[in-house]
Length: 242
Image 1 (spheres, helix red, strand yellow):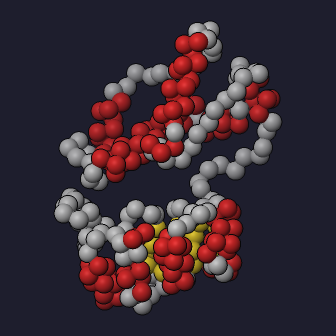
Image 2 (image 1 turned 120 degrees about the vertical axis):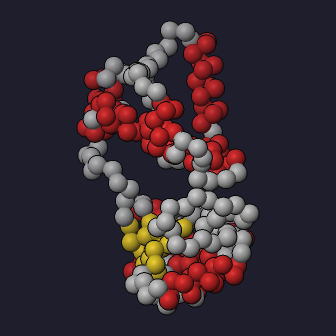
Image 3 (image 1 turned 180 degrees about the vertical axis):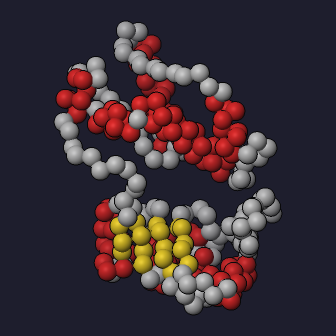
């Protein structure tokens, strides 16, 4: 999927591009997939990727396919606009199976989009299966007894209010200089590592908003890998329980 007017340096494994705003490209892509004799098409759906109102252009591709479609929904809106509801309902209707990553997604598909239960599959996010432990017990072991701990997860983006939280926390520290603050660091050329991961010369996406998201993903992956490398999976899970 390529932004209109842009060209990306895709690897040789990518045999076809779709201009996200060119409806004919979606139709041609359907013909390409049908002619290729592929057994199944796996669609990764997220709002903002595909062209048309609420990503409606992808329906042209899906409706032209002759093989089964398995769709993974990365976002299931609880209060969709009429167009968002229509597009997602149609995607589910033409899909052989619809995959979500949480039980809440399954519930919303049935209640808001009338998707049959038999068509929905839940594949949870890939995290270790860990039994619930009372947070106060873990806090005491880690020196956080009686203190509040704030945790956020998922993609970093400007609309989550994380910047406001950071500013508020800083203001609190300025009012209470003795408030506990923990920081651990290791010596590494962080941006050198990130550049090696990403490709030293360019981002894969275009426009400021998408580049911000791409950079946030790389930083999130870097931080997670470093924490696992330093602490290990089990200590990390113990810290999250607090």
